[in-house]
Image 1 (cartoon, rainbow, N blue to C red):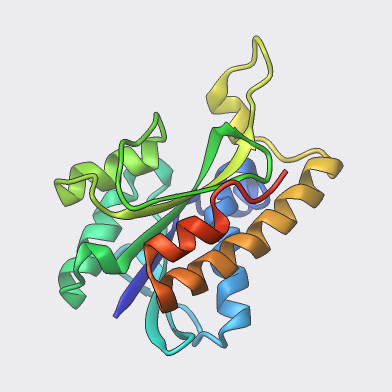
Image 2: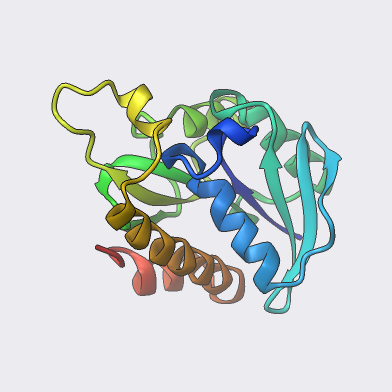
Length: 189
């Protein structure tokens, strides 16, 4: 089974914020691939879907961004999922709004959700898909920035990026990380 995790923060006050583009991408994937109704498991909401021909578990951790790793570890352990079958989606304020970047492995790049996932898994060798939400305006606190909402022009770019990210996940599930990187890295504004 493939596992796709969207990082974000639970609760209405965080809906449509920069930090929640991972959650937003999973919502779109769930709609596109007729996912079952999400249920509570692994300190997350989870739903199964067929992404292409791949049985896929969609995971929305409910422990807040900076503590998402436990949910990822619990899901991968329960399903005995090899790390090459795990993909984590998150925001990245170092990328311009709407830009995508997929990597087979790598550092957290300062993204605290990815940092916690790596800490809980004991490795940084898992696939991640970053959606650009930046740059942080000069003099602005990065934490406040990612918890903010998009301006209307940015929202248009992000909605396209979320659709592209969902397509990238489907590509990864069907054809692997190299093909997804070749087709989707740099896509977006």
